[in-house]
Image (cartoon, rainbow, N blue to C red; front, side, top):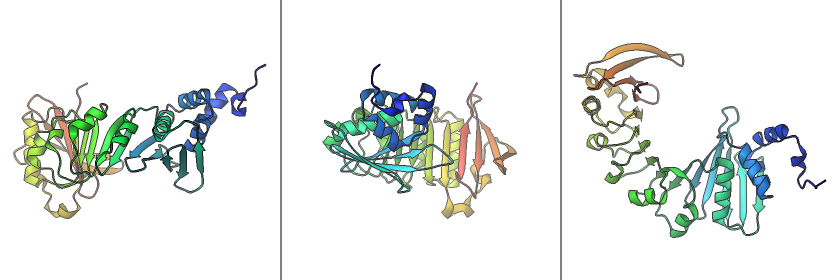
Length: 305
């Protein structure tokens, strides 16, 4: 009878998979480096999107991940230093230092992303120009979201490096005009650099502004232009916060000259007013304005069944 090298493999399959599903990221990564068979086993057991990951393009590169568990939220920090991987949880309870012969920083990152996220999509943050070594290290990683404070963001280069890129967040301006024509799923702007003309030429499906850049009249014009056929891919438009100009909000200005159907609706035990509008082709959208909550304004295009 062959010898089973790792005691955990002696468990019945159902119990083994249940044990792996309940294991922390540190435990999973610690097991995954023992052998290729163990890596495959851990990866297969971890295919339920339990974790979200973010890579920080610093020197050295670091990775942070969070558990997708509303009852037990924990962050984990991964530091890669050539042959060594250090992991620490945010509560300071669990940590590990791992080494694997022949592994480099690039191989460690690829290993962690494959095991914990099955390379289904990772966020990338950066605030300075990419170094050549960072591009090489991340070229095999499925980056689908980028957040940046770097003002010289060269759009085409990043879509060339990361062809699966679908979502972009700008934390500081200016915003490159070349991003407008991209068929993004999500574009968020956290500065006051977005103009009405900018918004009207967007080709993304979700456009989110962290703070308001428009006047009430410009919001009115944005909605009117959507009714006339502008922003045909738009599925959602939202403004998250408007703390400084709350007293200037006027539904009468926002919906001036627009045919609306106003109704009250209970959402999460909160009564709110919603406005139904209709585009020229019959497509409907619902608009909510919440003076005391985020998002401040939310426009959702209704999908045809």
